[in-house]
Image 1 (tube, rainbow, N blue to C red):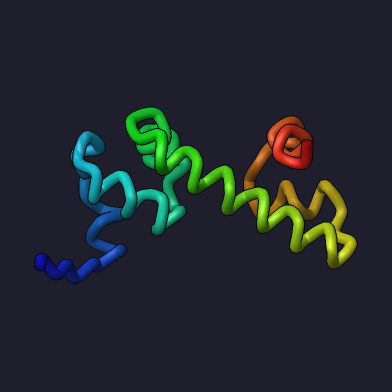
Image 2 (tube, helix red, strand yellow; image 1 turned 90 degrees about the vertical axis):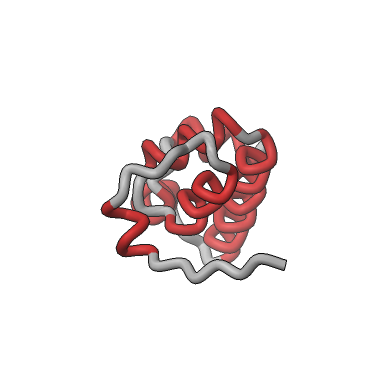
Length: 88
């Protein structure tokens, strides 16, 4: 069994190989760089589905608390169209 110690500040500063599955997951976990996340989603369908499910849950919880679409956009960095698609 391999163990990894992840230092997200170092990961953020690096230029990771986004063909590497570990780096793809780190990009999603970190959530700081939308470009890296988009690249990870393009290369890994499981990550694409995981992010979608996470966003759906976040939107549902925010709606339960009567959050406006504008606040959801601000917090999630999703577009209005993406939010509407995920709410279907």
